[in-house]
Structure formats: C-alpha cells, structure tokens
Length: 476
Ligand code: BGP
Image (cartoon, rainbow, N blue to C red; front, top):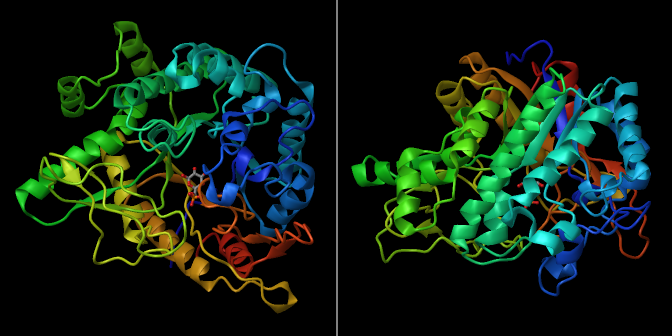
C-alpha cells in the first residue's frame, strides 16, 4: 500500500556531542559546548556530554545493532575538535582513526555513512581567537576542516551534510541565549553570523567539487512549515512574512544563492541586514548550483497570525522541562506571531505533532526548488520507561513515525523525490537543552546514575522499524 523507491535509504541520525562522550580523550580539543555546559545554569540540571552515551567506546556495539535492524544509512557528525583540537593546524591522527573506524564498521554491514561536517560543536580555540562564526575568518578554517575530511574520507563517504540546522544554532546562540555563545537579541550579529555560515557552507561545497568528487552534498535545515491562521488576508500576509524570515532566508540561499527580497528590505530598514559583497553573492550562487539535495529536519509546523506592533516579542520561553503547556507564544511585532494550532496535539515539550506537515514541506521544496530531499531528522522526544525484563513499550513513538512515514509516502506519490529518511535518533542520547530525560532512540540507554551501566536495550520501536525496512515501507 505504501510505496518507497527501491533504493530508499532508511536511516537514523546522531551528532557527535550528543552521543560520543570521551570529551577529553585521545587528543580531542575543547569545543564551545564543552565550555558552555560548564557555565552554571546553562543546561538542564547541569547535564553535560562528557560521557553522553559513550558511543566513542561502544560504537561497535551500536553499529552492530544498526546492522541487526537493517539500517541502510547512518547519519553521524564529526567532532571538529577530534580532527583539529584547536580548529586548525596539525591533524590529530587519533581523531581520523576514530571516524575511519566508524565508517569502516558501517561499510562492513552495508550501511551507507552520511556525514555531517558541523553539528554545532565548534573548537573553543576559534571562539577565543576570533569569536567563531562572528568573524569571516571562520570561513577559511571551516573549509580547511571540510577539505581535510573530503581528502581522508571522500572515497568511502558519498553523502555529506555541511551544516546542521544553521537556523537553529544561530537563533539559539545569538537571539535567545540558550546555546553558545549565549547572546541575547543580537540581531545585527545574528544575520552576519548567518552570512559567514552560508559562505562556509558554499565554499566547502565548491571545494568538494574542485577536488573532483561527484558524491551528494547539501545542508540540513530545521524546517518548520507554516499555515495561516485563517483566510483573513492579514494573516495570510503574516505567513508570507514568517516564511521569508524564518524559512526562505536559509532555503533560498542554499538552493538559489540569493536572499529573499522582501526580508532583506525589512532587515535593511531595521539596520540589521548582513554585509554582503558582490564576490559573496557570486560564491553563493555558484555553490547553489552544486548542491544535490535539501536536507530537512522536521519536528513540527506552526501557525501564523498577524502580530500588532506592540504585540508579542520573538523570545518566549521554550519548554525545556517536559511539563506540557509551559511554552510561550513567540512572534515578531508588526509581522507575525505563532499561536498554538488548535487542530493538533503536542508532545510533552509542546511541539506540535503534524505528519501532514511533512507532505506539505516536501511539496513546497519540490515546487519551489526542484531538489531531491533527504529527511535528515524526524522523531519523537518522550519520557520512556524501562519495564520488567528490560522492555520499553514505546507505542507512541511507533505511532508518530508511522504517521510521518505515511505522509512521506504521500509526498513521494505526489511526485517528490525523497532519497532518505533518518529518524532522530538510533540510541537515546543527550538532548541539548533537556538533558537525558527526553529520549528519541530505538535503543534505550540506561543512564542509571548508580550503576552507570549505559547498557543498551531495544525498544518496541526497534523491532517495528526493522520490519518497516525489511518490507521497504510497504508494511507501516
Ligand atoms: C535538532 C538537532 C538535534 C536534536 C533534535 C532534537 O534540532 O539537530 O541535534 O537535538 O533537534 O531536539 P531536542 O533534543 O531539543 O528535543
């Protein structure tokens, strides 16, 4: 009944800081996250990724579980600080070895490695030297790092994601102060930082081609598609404003190499537009022609309603506690606000559950950009319970993923080219702002503080996804 392409990449995703642990082992340098989590009050109950789920030492066990499940692709990120402990300079061979082992282990089982070059853990040395992405100097260091990865792993890795969720790490870093560098409402810098990140992405893409590789390369964007509250034209306009500022600002640059016109005008009037040179424009345009897919991380959709000039501000409180109903409405005065969608249920962290939103965004990408799509993340964060005999009955997760896969198959049926679907995540891992209580995995990790066992247990969803893969999605 449900159809997926013959060579569809059924996958799962992770990120170095959230899974590896071993934060100071084998020559690894300190990252901005290693630093940030040590500032009191920054993370949920002071949780760190120092140990995380110790994937660094247990990767063989984890990848064997992936193979048992039949995973076709494993998306993971490389910790820049393992390769270049201080961001540039001499290569740390131990870091290369670790990722070579992961790649080899995947290939041994026929699992396609999909590598994210940057999933938020920036060498702290580059922050100390020039404030990381705030300086254009980041571009050369990022490209040097990316080229090193292409050179060493380029023959065995065919799928590359330059940046993970540029829109999120910059928003939480410079607007809401929840991620490093923990700055609040620095809009001018926010847009400049993004421009540097776009250039880093673009130059890495161009370098990949110049080095003669013909693999697949693109960026992953946290896409929150939007619906107008109703047919009141002022609400329809608020949706357009939202999309320009919150979605197309990134998607258009990746796909066309151009910023959305109305949003740029708006930012110029506010005096916070980025400085973009003619040369930059050419680089962005050239790189846009070279990307092979749009990577999408999809968790929720939103509603747009007109927001008066004296209306709600952008920085409401995010629910990081798992107590339903603690998130606040956010918006940009004069443009839009995002009230709750009364038709949709939410997770314990107030994220709307909207499978059809996945069909919607695939259709939108297909018609606006005509690009193949990789769903690089999608999943449900929940409080899981370890029952007797080490069972975890996560029917809610099965239900969530099943509905999203049905929606994805609808998008495919309607003509969208979807190459891969990666759940977030394979094993449980660290949630940046929610510690270890918010679980996403198919594999439960027992972080029992007393036993410290970190044992792995398969959840019900593990067996279910295994069957989905076996039947290529026919049996959802
Ligand atoms: C995405 C990130 C992931 C992961 C996921 C779940 O934004 O790319 O790294 O954390 O969201 O988010 P959370 O842990 O906040 O629930």
